[in-house]
Image: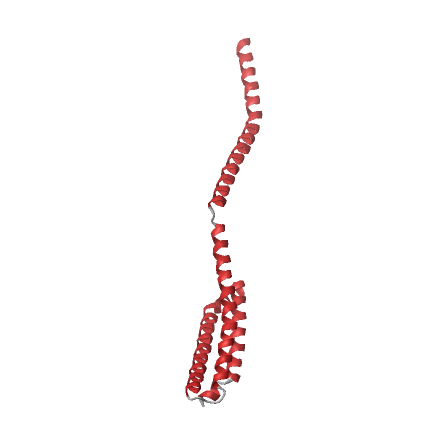
Length: 164
């Protein structure tokens, strides 16, 4: 009964369901408005599905080991196939995982590099000095007509006083 329930049809159905849930999860991560409210439910669904697949795989391996110990015809060949598949699947997976982690960790470390931080700080100080220079020029240009009119009015007042 259990072997019929955990047969290839159920495994394929669960794998298709997990593929759909993973696609929805990736879209939810990219677009908050689309599935943002269901993000935690999608993560929980993926974790439950992965747990079910792991449980089913463990059950099948336990069953294969039992068949191997009972010396069932073909169990030794099946064990070799499973071992070969595991090696052929896990080694490339481990290599890709290693390089992905290295790429991400070095990429993120370079984002917060000291040289970049110093360049940002020097650009900020240059920007501040440029804005202060522009502000001083603007202020002097604005005050220039006022000072000219003030000097004109002072000279006019002096002329009037000197006439008296």
